[in-house]
Image (cartoon, rainbow over all chains, first blue to last red; front, side):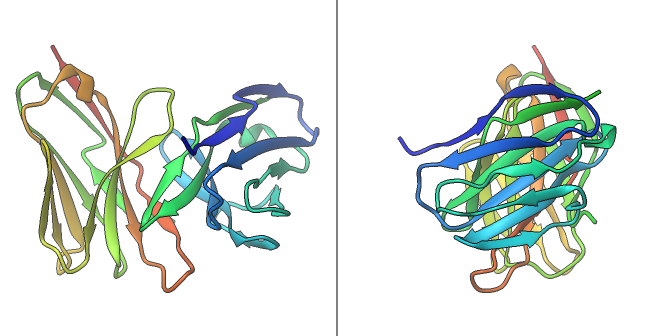
Length: 111
Length: 113
């Protein structure tokens, strides 16, 4: 079955380090998204992509970057991790119609 | 900023009772969707209602949409302990191929056995 996978599922990193969260989908679909989820804020859009070489900023993009070199992958990079970036990160892909499928999440702790 | 806002933030009911969650949004939409999230897991799509629809059913789920009030409700009938989860509404306000969903903060539903 087609799926969307995130790695790592859990990570602890130090302030100032660069961190990359991987997202891989097997649907070969163009639309991919990164959200972060925090208590009191729900899900907020970080970055999104509508296809290869296309990337767009969401509402909370500061301190994050993405790249889209192929259809299957949209890695999320924290350039210099900050404690405020401790969160759960979800990757998602639009599979068909108007609904999206989510990965299982990546729990990131910045100490 | 959030497009959808769910109400209440938390809801606790007994098994067998109905659960109603509400969602308000700010701008015009193409459709509104409800998602469910079990603790520690990703979100799972439940149901979609288009802007020209007023009510939709799927199993024990009933969704209504009032575009004049910019609000939607999700009703879960005959709730079960397994329905315990967070429920999110999401709005699609995009045009053409520029698809994007905006999520609310969610309602935490606890169904007590």
